[in-house]
Each structure stands twice: as C-alpha cells, then as structure tokens.
Amino acid sequence: MKVLLINPPMPYEIKGHLQTPLGLCYLSSMIKSIAESLVFDCNVSGDIETTIHQFKPDVIGISVLTATYINVLKLLCAVSQLAKPNCIFIAGGVHASIFPEELLKNGFHLVIRGEGERVFFGVISSIAKAKDYYDLAGISFVGEDGVIKHNPDAELIEDLDTIPLPDRKDLPLHNYEHEAILTSRGCNFRCFYCSSSHYWGHKTRYRSAENVFAELWQLYITGVRKFYFCDDNFTSSHALVKGICQGIIFESMNIRWSALTRADTVDIDLLKLMKQAGCTILSFGIESGLNAFHKNTKKTSIEKIMATFAMLREIGIKTRTTWIIGLGKTVEDEYNSLQFIKELLPDQVSVHCLIPFPNTEAWYKPEKYNLVLDKENFDWNVMNMTYSPYLLDNIRFKHITKEEIISLIEKTRKELKDYKYDGVQRKFETFLDNEIIKVIE
Image (cartoon, rainbow, N blue to C red):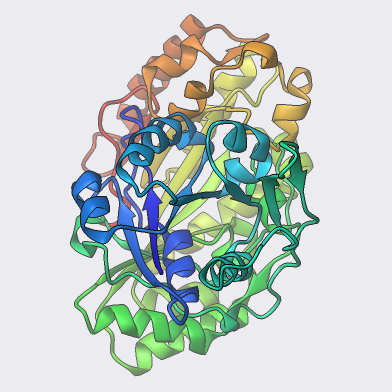
C-alpha cells in the first residue's frame, strides 16, 4: 500500500521561514513497516500532479494548520481529481483537530485529532488489512448513516523515544533555511493567544538526550550544519539541554543552531554550555514591555528578562524577540510596550499583531482582549496573514485603530534608528514589511 503525505502550500501572504514538516515526517517513519510512504512539501518539492501520477497513492494525508486551511480545501479539490477513485483522504494537524466537522464536510474521509503517530499507524494498518478502523480512538469520520462520529481522544504518547526518527528522505533539505528538530512536546504555560499548549496538553513530555542526538547526528553526516530547536520552551529541561550540548561538544560537531525559549528558564552556566555547543541566537516571545502582562500572563518579570539579556550579551549569544500589538488597553499602552525595546536592545525585533487563533482564550473570549470578532462570518484568510499589511483590514480592536497601529509602527521604527536598528547592527521587522529576518545567518 502507498501513502502520500502532503504539506500544503503556505499562503502568499506568509513570507516566513520555511521549515521541515516534521509532523508528516514522523508519520512517514511510523508506518514504514506496513506501507510505502512519501512526504511531499508543496512549498519546496515541485509538481504535485506528477508525483500523484507516478506514485499512485492509496491514501493521501494532508496536514491542516489554521494558516493553510483555505489552501488545503483548494488542494483537496485538485488532488481528488488526480488520485485513484478509491483513494482515501485523511486530514490531521492543529486546525483539523479543532474543526474536524468542517474537514469532513469538505471531502475528507477521516480526521485524526491531536497527536497522530499511533492513531495513524492503526488507521493505515487497518486499511492495509482491509479492516474497519471506525473503533480507533482519536478519529472523526462520517458513519454509514451519514452522521459525523467523534471517537474518544487517543492517549498521548508518554515515551517519545518510542517514535521513530522523522523520515526526511523525500525532502530537498537544502531548500530550507535550517533543519528543525523537536526535543519535547507541550508547554506548561497557558498564554491566552497560543494554541500549542491546548493541542499537546498542558504539560511537557521530553525525548532523551541520546534520542535527540541520534537525529542530530543523522542529519550532520548528510551535511546539514544549521539547526533550529522548535520546542515551545527549549530550556525547560536543563538536563536534556546539557545532554544534547555535551554530545555536540564531544563529537566536535561544527554546527550553528538556534532555539525558542523563555528568559526565566536559563542560567549563566547553561548559556555558556549552549554557546560552546554552537548556539548562535535564542528567540524569546517577549510580546510586551508592560510589567503587568509579564506578571499575569507570562508569570515572570521585566527585571528577570533584563537580567537574562545581560547574560546573553556577556556570553555572546544573539537575541531574537517577538512583540505583539494589541495586548494593551489603550494606544498609550501599546506605545509604552514597544519602548521596552530601547531598554532590552535585542539583536532582532519582530513585531506582530494579536491574532485570535482557534482554541485559545483570545478566540473564546475576544471581548476580554479588546478584539472585535464576527464568528458567524469569520474569514479564515485572516489566519493566513501573519506577515501582511492586509491583516489590519480583518483584525480589529476596540482600543486602537488600523491607522493608529500603522502610525505606531512607523514612529517606533523611526525612533529605533537612534538605537542602531539599521538592518546591519540590529534588525527590526514588522508584519507590514515585505522582507523578514533570517534566524540563522
């Protein structure tokens, strides 16, 4: 049996960093013993029509994010005309897990909700044996009576080392800015604008350092030298990070890497070890310069952030930060929030707009965050616009207008030039810009 796993094209508005579709790569490796699989990334892999004609899949699985939902529907319409008549279409991913009914109504035969590896293996195994899969946990489907059924959620995989290393063999890795590696799943925090902790469960599960290093080494011997650890909080387990770094240092691996983390989960000794192991830049979701936000939402403080950034400058690790307009209660709040950039002086600044992603508190309680949402006539293309001037035509706030946001950004950009944000020494980008900053130079 043949299984084609497709990462849909990102919308043109998103000029973000192309990244390996790790979820699909994990699924591919999971089913190697029972099916022939192929991972296809529409953003880098070429012609999907030729691939379908040559591969002739029996099953097509498509990853569905909120940002790609509209493109997924277009892709499904196109590939369903190219595939064999009895081809089975399966949807998975964050958006599919939240809105399985919508995917089923639009032509998918099956939706896998949540963490997919074991469920997907069960589905493919059943199909290969010509058996029903309708009793499997973690799936939604249309029953023989035409009614949509939702089976109970599948249990999370506690031992992540039992999942085979992701299968990247079909992907042109040179087309990605860096190679992504996930060392953990989940987040212990509950930020009201982030759906990750909801998707993975409000706890963190970790791979072993040996398991992560095996993946690093597998990529290293093929020539990969730039890596991004894409965990929600890479340094939440110091033991894991130390184990990975010690492996890199012991093998004298000449690599550069970055990670996303929090300012309150690092210390000077860990940062020095990370630097020695090749860490060049760390990304932080600062989001706001208002202390009340950090105390109430991030459960940290401005003082802690300042102290961490002082350590990073001393050690020589660069900093990338993200900021969100829309977290304040007044226009003055929004301006004061961005003033913190002048105190923190990160090497890279990326300014975004608060987007109410589904399954977040911002989505369920928009009025609490000054958001104006018409859910009955909601345009999913809004979610396609992380980087786009058109975002402000769709996202609206009670406390600040589109014109005021644009004025605020331009005023901040002008002021920051006095702080060497000239694109050379320090870099500043916003969702209104045409170009975005590379994470690893």
